[in-house]
Amino acid sequence: MNLISYFLIYSLLWGLALLPLRILYLLSDVLYLIIYYVIGYRKKIVFKNLYNSFPEKSSDEIKDITKKYYRHLCDFFIEAIKTINITKKQLDRRFRYINPEVINELYNKKKDITLISGHYANWEWGATMPMFVKHTVLVIYLPLQNKISNKLINKLRSKFGIKPAAMHEIYKEILKHKERGEHTITWFLGDQRPPKRSKYWTKFMNQETAIYLGAEKIAQKLNHAVFFLDTQKIRRGYYEISFIPLFNNSKDTNEYEITEAHVRILEERIKEKPEFWLWSHNRWKHKRKIV
Image (cartoon, rainbow, N blue to C red; front, side, top):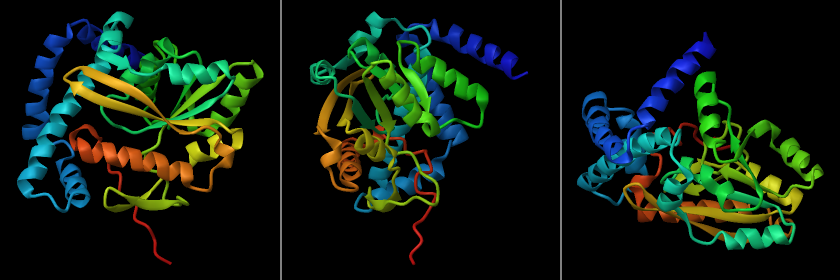
């Protein structure tokens, strides 16, 4: 049954993705009206997250950010679907890498990389990365309970050569490529909510926040260079991406230094243009226990 459901859903999305983006954005406008005004998808969570993150902003400002966020979220859904049959030429024009040479220089020096970003702007179109870098690109994911969604997401992400790797298997996966003589970029979305037992908490967006330490631990253990993937939305459907160097030799960093570095850059980007972050995720569901 799961296989049948997968093919039915994929066929439906494939047919939808045949439409040009200008038409899909009209559908996004309709979707926004339904999700924001009719369904009210996770509105309470969005408002709560925004009010807690920006206590200095007025109610009108928060409402304005919220509306912009839902418009962007609908565009993101549409753009993710379009990934099914979008061409390399189309994505090269819409998702432009500013400085891939800084990554390729490290490939020539046989240096592996830990790359960190957040759920900001459009992370799914980052699937085009293998078109511009020489490394093998591994993207970390947390397996979803819904196997159909899991399969669909991984299929889209691997379209241009990215290799999805489950969080609990990433170390083995990196070593496997290393044994083959392949140099890797291991890409983490560093703002996901970790389990309740999280070891590290920091102040992020005005709130005590648990942070995954996986990126830092992998980088330090294997002495990776560390970069932040900075994605800027220029206008509807157009993005510019920069690789921001953080550390060249992770083994020389102090505990939590890498984690704090990528958290602060993401926080800065969110404060600049808050409507592009994933506010509907219940990021602060777990609270820190004071002992």
